[in-house]
Image (cartoon, rainbow, N blue to C red; front, side, top):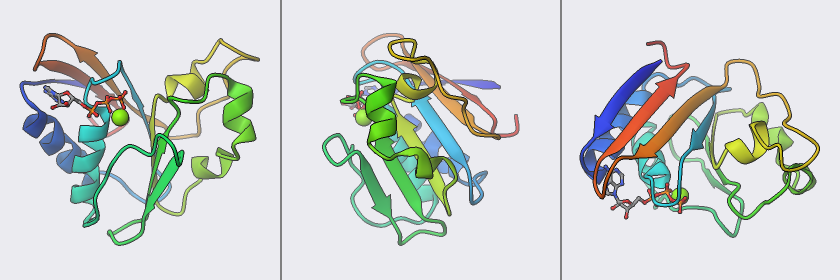
Length: 149
Ligand SMILES: Nc1ncnc2c1ncn2[C@@H]1O[C@H](COP(=O)(O)OP(=O)(O)OP(=O)(O)O)[C@@H](O)[C@H]1O
Ligand SMILES: [Mg+2]
């Protein structure tokens, strides 16, 4: 586990680029933290680090955005609009827990720490987490686990 204090969006994105170097095919990364904490910004860095060129934005309506032009396929999920575990499972997202590339999940606590519905499902083996805490307008405390430090 490691902690990083980000002072601006660029530092958050740079952390994402750095962490991308440690990802191999099959990795599943869960991002947690409040609205506007910087989850999508970090995913933009991960995508750049994986060599994705296209625009990376939150897949709030689509549920999943797939980016196929990087060193590994990147599947970007956002569970914000799914209120219950039943909805998450009903959306057919389980296949993304064993990806032929990298899966990143915004609002991952809705899946693995739910408590709102029938209870959490088990996170996949090797599951990595990145947790955001908003300290003030521009500072974020980012704690990451499973990346090898
Ligand atoms: N240190 C920082 N790191 C990241 N974003 C920051 C930072 N400081 C300020 N910001 C601002 O916070 C916002 C973060 O937005 P972003 O979409 O990445 O958050 P999010 O966690 O994905 O939110 P949501 O839950 O709505 O998906 C941006 O407007 C960004 O400019
Ligand atoms: Mg987001």
